[in-house]
Length: 467
Image 1: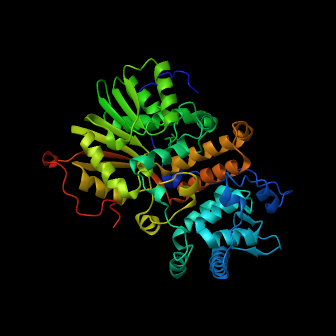
Image 2 (image 1 turned 120 degrees about the vertical axis):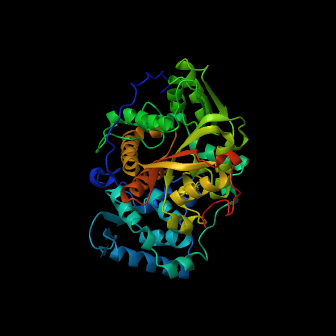
């Protein structure tokens, strides 16, 4: 994991696969279904109630909540292209991937009480499963906008859980939220990431992708980001969101001088180790520092899949910080996961399973938000936006397959079965989002605009840019 990396040859022009013609299908199976010799009650009994209180205990649910949940679910399952099976032999759906509801009562209670959080917790508890989890979740993602009728959505808001105070990404809360995910264990991430330890979408030459091609695809992604920012010999680079240091190493090998900031102590420790082993300590400085407190100016500012952790309340601050840290004539290159703007507006105040268990405080922006906040808070324009959604689906498939193959190694690190089911659901859920087109990932170039000499325009909209 920490051996020095060999510099790759200079990137050559390549054909990028076209999403419509080259995108892979969700044809590969996910992890095996839960052990059918155990009932959901037996699986729940093995869940650590201290570590996983929301999973170990089936919530109480009012008659009204159960009625609403039953109405929503049965209506959805009847019209979705799924084949839903119940323990009593009932079948719902128009055909397609198999969804097995193993404990209907517990499933209804969880969904009726906490919506998507309950849906995820029910999977973690073994109350539902699927032979092809990605295929089932892709169908659900395909119909996300219409899955719950508008009137019933408004009813659910009367009792659906709201965002906790910890979801506000103040400097103190941000460090805690980042630590809850990225400080789990460097060894854990090393089990399913490739040797670059890149935890963001790769860019492949073609589909379907193979594990042996992932390292080259991650370098290709990084090279495109650095090329957008025009990083060359002597460029002063700021990286916001270090990861495990691969982008900094690759920029330094171009002759750049890099400052990289992160809030993850574990990531910073290993990134510094990798920099030392590569003999690049004179060119790369890794800091544990909030992006808001960074000073100075840089020729290039790069940030790969970090905006997702900023939170809507601080999006304006994030873009204003990018502007402040970019030297006159400098460029910003961002890689960001995006969601449709209408779905952002519908979901930005809800509390989701992903936020509770995977990325506390996280929220995906839309393309409209990125463009609007760039205009309102910077002297820059979005000069280019390249889309790589199908590439992320393949990246996630490779990670998920690797994670599943290394289940015994995950256990050996001290993570239990509930964690493994949670992580498989997270990877499959994310993959399905990209396979369906509900999610996208883009590389944005923010370049100086002609009128930038006078400084950024005054903001005229709410800071989160979501109106």
